[in-house]
Amino acid sequence: MSVISRVLKAAPASPGADSSAALRSRRLLLLSALLTAAGAGLLIMYLHRFETQVSGGQRVQLLAVITPIPRGTVLTQAMLGIREVPVSYVEQRAVKAAELSKVRGVRTAIDLDPQDSLLWTDLAVAVEDRDLSALVQPGNRAFTIQARHGGSGSSANELIRPGDYVDVLATFGERSGSNGGRTKVLLQRVLVLAVGTETQRQAFQGPADKATAAARRSASLTLSLKLDETQLVALAAKEGELSVVLRGASDPAVIEGIPDLTPQNLVEAAAQANRRRNSQAGASALPLRITTGDGR
Image (cartoon, rainbow, N blue to C red; front, top):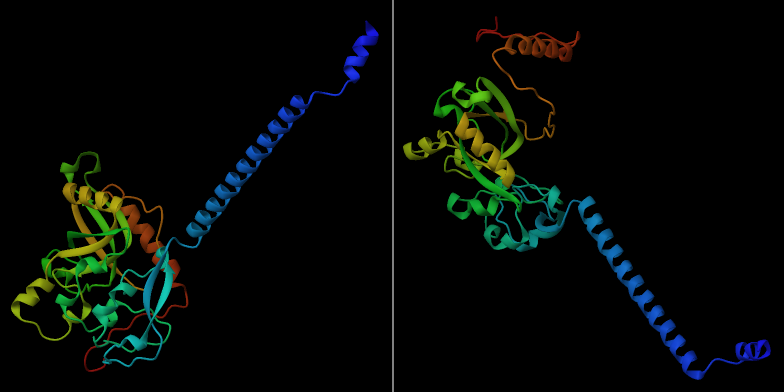
C-alpha cells in the first residue's frame, strides 16, 4: 500500500491542474499590477495637490508691465504681458489677464516699471469703468460696513482711500451681555475696496461737487473679506459698534494674542502701552520739537 502511495505522489499532475494554477497566478499578477498602478496614481495626485498648496494655490493670470511706462501714457496691448501668480500671493487690486479689454486705451496715473504687476490703482479710470465685482479677489467677498475712524462723525473716514488697509475693531456696550463693556480687535490688515460710493483713489483728488463730497465723507467702507470673516463682522456690527484704524500699506505685520480691553483693565493696559512705547523709543531717540510759524 505504501508503494502505491509513493507512486501516486511521484506521478506528474494532470494538465488541467497546471492550467488552473497558471490562470490563478496570472489573475493575481494582474490584480497586483492594477493595485500598484492605482497606488502610484493616488501618490501622484497627492504630491500634485501638496505642491499646489505649498506653492500658494492655483495659478491666476495677471497683467504685468513689460516696458517702462511714463505717467499719463495710454496703455496698449504691446506694453503688457501675462504673469501667472499663485492665488495666495495675488494683490487684490491686480488686473487680471481676462480684463485686458477694460484697461486697453486707459491712461496711467503713475510711472510704471517693467516686471510690475498692473494694479487698478495705477490707472486713471472713471468710476463707471470699474465694477466693484471686478475688484473682488477669488475666495473673497465685498462687505460694506458703517464704521468710525479717528472720530465720532461720518466725516472721520475722509482720509481713508480705496486701496488702503485697515484694522477692524468692535466695541460692545452693556446691552451685549457677557461681551458688554469691551473692545475686541476683530481683523487686521483688511483691504478697503470702496469708500462711500468711490472705488478709485483718483476720485479723491481735486475739487468735488457737493454730491461727490458727501459720498466721500460717508462712513460706509466696503472691505474685502473671506466668507467666514463676513459672518464675524456682521454679528459684531449687530451687537456693537465697529471702528477702523488706518495702517501703512507696506506693513504686513499681524499681531497675535491681543487681549480684549475692558473698563476694568483700561488703566493697566494704558500703563503697559506707555512702557512699550518708551522701550521702543530708546535712549537715543531725539525729542520732537514743534515750532511756530516764525521759527520759535
